[in-house]
Image 1 (cartoon, helix red, strand yellow):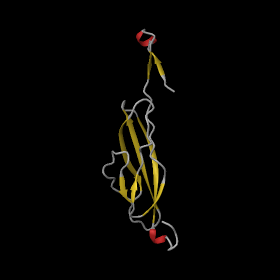
Image 2: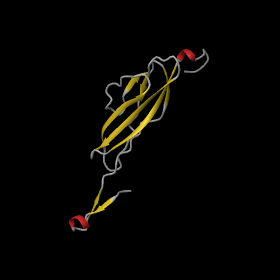
Image 3: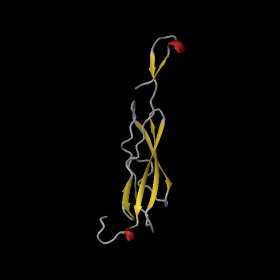
Image 4: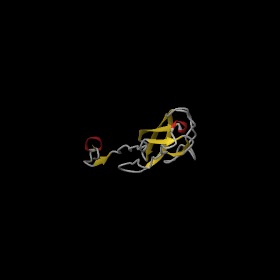
Length: 124
């Protein structure tokens, strides 16, 4: 639903001008992965109801630090899950900006499993 500002009172014209709605960030579903595996963050579900997504930015909020490749400004960066000694949660925040520089953020949790804790019959 669009919000309207009536310029009748401002400009004296009686024409409604649509206001830009902010984008909706979608950092994708939470994931559970094995240590040392390649992980892809999924920001392609982000939308802008009245324009387009201009910029993506990922930030790591918690967990052992990782490097996002090829860059943290892509909708789907990847990283190698760190080696862990116990199951560990990494949290990432995606912020998106639309073509009018309004922004929105969403977070995703990646649980990295310690594969040494898996028995020989447990699936990976």
